[in-house]
Amino acid sequence: ARSGSKAFVQEMNMKSQLGGGGGGTDAAIGQGIIGKFGVGFYSGFMVADRVDVRSKPAANATTADAPPLVWSSTGSGSYTISPLPDAVRQDRGSSIVLHLRPECSDYANESTVEKILKRYSNFVGYPIYLNGNRVNTLDAIWLHDPKSVSQDTHAAFYKYISHMYDEPLDTLHFRMDAPLDIKALFYIPSFHQEKYGMGRMEPGVSLYCRKVLIESKSPDILPEWCRFVKGVVDSEDLPLSISREKPQDTKLVGKMRKALTRKIISHLATMAKKDTEKYKTEFYREYGFFLKEGVCQDYESQKPLSKLLYFETSKGMAGELVSLDEYVSRCPPEQKDIYYLYAPSRELALQSPYMEGFAKSNREVVFIYTAIDDFVMANLKTFEGRNLTSADRSGIDDASTKDKDKQNDDKTKDDDESNSTNTTNPKLTTTEADQFCAWFQTTLSAKVSQCRTTDRLTSSPAVVTDNESGAMRRMMRMVETSDGGGEFNVTPLPKQTVEINPEHEIIVGMHRLKERDPVLAKVLAEQVLDNCLVAAGLLDDGRSMLPRLNDLMLCIVKSNSDQDGNSESCGDGSSSASSSKEKEEKTADDATTTDETKKE
Image (cartoon, rainbow, N blue to C red; front, side):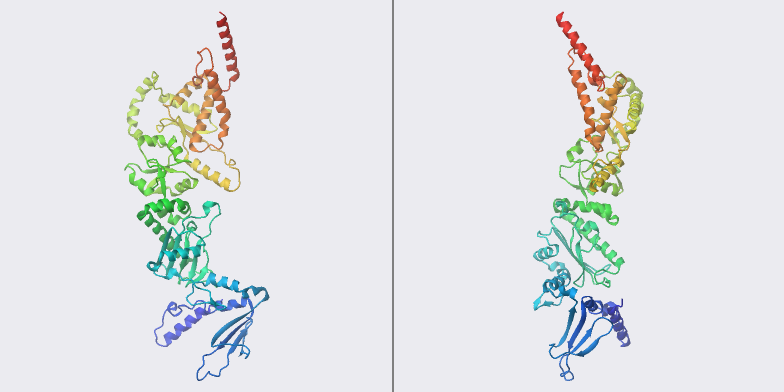
């Protein structure tokens, strides 16, 4: 397509140079001519069979008696110029008349024309009248000095462009001239609609060029995670496509997108620093999800966005949020990692066995409660040179233990000898612990890939440590559910690494029981593993434990119901969940003996 505007600018530039004026830039000469030539007029033939342009010159000495003329064309490549009939009135100036096609008669409807004018030309500087009434009555306040616009004006304009009834939470009004001339006005609503189940929001920012709408709710000028932002962007430097509905230079649009995104992030960072309470309680609680989405999707903005994230921690109070920068500032110099723990709630996080080692060493842990938080940590990987490490990862022991490794090695032999006779605080020796781990791994070989001892636990018998499978499994479960699949139709759980506490009474008792009652010991091992999976949030269906739990409770009840008082407890190996028949026979024999004793 031939650009009439461009040809006009080039011709004017050439005349300026020939006239000795030194010439000028195309931009300076062509200021304000968009829409005056070419496509803007040719588009009339899309809806009309014939277009007439009626014109009457201003009266002067030479044109006092000049009749008005009419230019007429069907758009087929030819035109006619003839005097305007006397029956047709034409005052000084020009009129354009479209003879609409039958299928386009709707454009003769006043409401249709008014709707189009208000959509695309509501902010143009010159007045537009429709049947004697002015249509464009709104002011393009984004072109004003930001300091001159009142809060009431912003509130009214926000409601107009967003079609919402609330007051804006915050306003960002600015101008910039690099990498291109931009005038922007952004609003952050006080709430967003996605949380009410109304579906994913459309982009909320429209693109204008010289106050004329180019693209409504443009998806190109801001990243998708900024879809909660409402407002307008106006730039005179954007070359437009032939339809005038899309910017033509995608590279230039990309530069504008980056500049606007940096401006929004910088504004949010300023709010977080200067008005922290407003940022935490009003903005972050409402829009934190969008920032986390940006961390996962917008790699270029990932680092500055990570500084805007806030979380609860183990050392804070319920509902108290801290940034990752604050967490790092409280870390001891020797701590090289940022630890986080996924749990459904703060209460469950504090009760998690993974917290035992951190509580013992007084290390702070970030609590995350949603799958998106888990995904954010996996995508960030590092923050300010520190690794983001899940608390359920293998190899995390109590920091104080490392300082005692040498002393423990020197005392291993003495401990082994003393533990063999210690009955008040029993624990497994190194040899016994190795034997138990080998038995545990062999017994549950279908579910356990490795079993080893750990110093991280104090009150729990064991934990599973495989954070990658846990994070991926939670994400897979969420994807399966969103795609309409069953919640439990996910990939089978991979084999887990189990770390045991050799000082826990359950582990010590199981070690003694595995020789005397191997069936019951296996049942207990399966229950210990399931308990670990529950603590890690990896057990797909807790109902699978019910038969085993019923058997264990039956074992305890029968052991305590013996009348002779000589039977040992279930945990000491005198009964088995799988030997109910034998227990019933023993109970019957005991009852017979008791009767005979009474007779005597």
